[in-house]
Image (tube, rainbow, N blue to C red; front, side, top):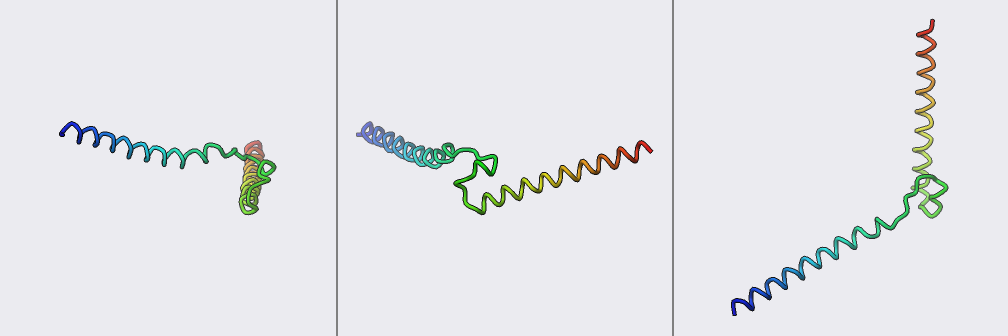
Length: 81
């Protein structure tokens, strides 16, 4: 009798762990299958808000790079004088 309860307890534990693993794997699988979109051209199927955010980030980065280049040019000019 004691051995029967031990085996049933082990089977129940394996079943619970299996269900938890299945639930976790189903939560991870869709994220792994989504393609990585790095440019707005690749984001054709994305919601408009996401595409706008990507464009805004790209514009901000370009603006920051231009400001940095201008600051470097000004510093180099001041150092040469």
